View 1 (cartoon, rainbow, N blue to C red):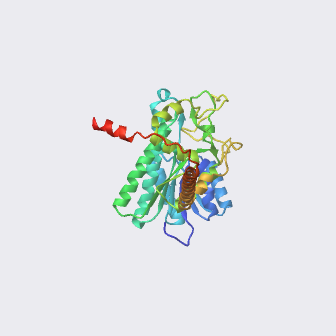
View 2 (cartoon, rainbow, N blue to C red; view 1 turned 30 degrees about the vertical axis):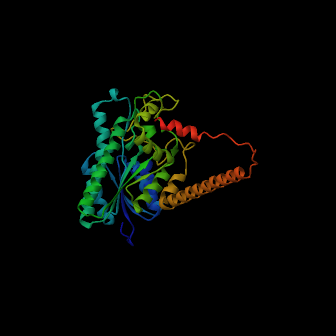
View 3 (cartoon, rainbow, N blue to C red; view 1 turned 120 degrees about the horizontal axis):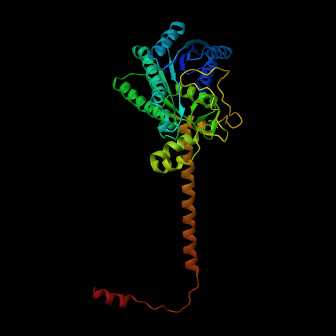
Length: 366
């Protein structure tokens, strides 16, 4: 992305809570000007206040990203307030925890409209502004579930797969037209966000992300870094990277393994009367964090190493080379020692019989 002296202008969807909220605060600390969208006005106002307390400025748009008019209005109002958009972060999501045969068609459609088409509409609104200027960065917030689906979240997993395919097409089209707009996808691990409090669920147990769980500020750092150092994809969390790679090698094994895991479940019973946010926002004082602070990791060594991918690769290659050289030297010294021992061993003086003439006679009959 081109350097500029004025503050960056950034749009974030799903910005009132969770990863979106943490990401807004991270950009605010760098002095960014932000356009934020979500369905709950009260939480958006809280997010706007938090942005301004951390050195940024923000405008808010109350709306549903499943409606393309919402993302278009967000783009227009952000540019009217702050100028050309530099970075667009698609993050809004919805999900349902349920067996496939128990889900309603309307629920599949709703998750798809928000979690997939919301990204499509946001990307289109960004492109309408970025293409004429031939600059800008689009960040798609993904998941390891964009590669490997898990039980009880079929609609959400399918939407993340769709985002991945859509983004690959977009990238190729930009290359075809020789455009200088950057597109990157950040694949996240389990996050400690409020979605596990308000997600619609038919499971008997309360919802919980599978371990390891990370704090949303780690995702925000990864998103901020990826927006300024765009690569094709960025994996956050060691199990995200391992899971994606193992799925390419042994998908059938993972089919069976994941069928035995309690994804999305705790040992606590779910409150059947608890409200969910599939069709309307759940009221309450929610921010970036969910209920799993005691278990969530605040750091990721994999993230630090991945930021320094070239240095990490060179270091590992050097360590491997040194280890291989040392092993070769040890083997070489062992061979020399054995030769010396054989040469210095006392001879018995007894001539051993030789079978060479007999072998030559046998060979004559072959």
